[in-house]
Image 1 (cartoon, rainbow, N blue to C red):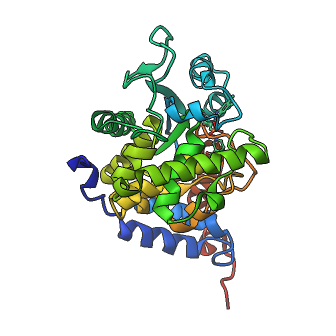
Image 2: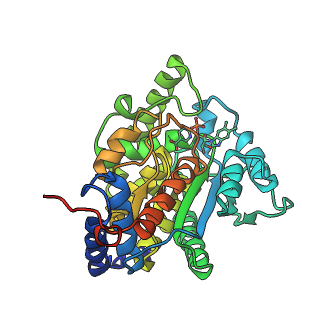
Length: 350
Ligand SMILES: Cc1cc2ncn([C@H]3O[C@H](COP(=O)(O)O)[C@@H](O)[C@H]3O)c2cc1C
Ligand SMILES: O=C(O)c1cccnc1
């Protein structure tokens, strides 16, 4: 059963502040609308922060990591051990997201939800110990009810921590070898599309590997067909600890009024699951980029999302979202710092 807290209503955006921001944009020294999505970003952030002039100072990034039983089916170009190895790399500051966070002045934390390796001795990592990864969903539900609830709750708790730290924005990243298979399986059910249409190379499978991945997903969907009757069941049967944590985080962020910048394919599947479990939460979501993973496009369309960047990234870890932070900051700076037509004595539109 879906936990009660997950479906509590999201906070309404401040439409008065949004309107005030729109009116300010109309007075700035540029043809109306000429800053395109940068204008919309400023107005969205105004509505989210309840002030005409929003800012984007404190960015909070939580990386959720977990192992996947489905890796036993040989569906990734990399071995399962990479999940744990990358957790250590995050902790040491050597991963792409580590560099991005440092460069952006964002806070970064790593949550080990449950991996095959015992990483409790690794300093600087939160350990939740939900088990040695999910079960192989080709044969069994990926998560028990208790694991799924704990993972959703872990996401909620990290958003609460972000709020405590006065964060202006929440980014969730993920790490879990095999999680494009998990996310693709979920997306097939959420969108009612066949795996042939959504599956892609993930970390770099060649054509034969993608065909095998499609076959494994198709068999898994057949196996659990009768159980996959709700977005929560889809998450529990086919998801991962980190995907559930993202889902819980996204719902909490919308409920508490903290805007979210969604990352790539896997994060967007979590965002779609969140929106299906609690319609309306997606009003609080921005989308950092369009991933090179081919299935991302269909997910973005289902969310009516307009991603900010399209750089051919296919990494995860929150990297595509983090890469878009400078645009959010520029949108706020333009909104705040540009002169109005009156201030600059520039003639307005005829
Ligand atoms: C070194 C390395 C660092 C990563 N950081 C994120 N991912 C990404 O790749 C994985 C998903 O792809 P698949 O489903 O094909 O296994 C996830 O862990 C994801 O975050 C990485 C993958 C690797 C190899
Ligand atoms: O878009 C993503 O999030 C992604 C794509 C491939 C591998 N890992 C993550």
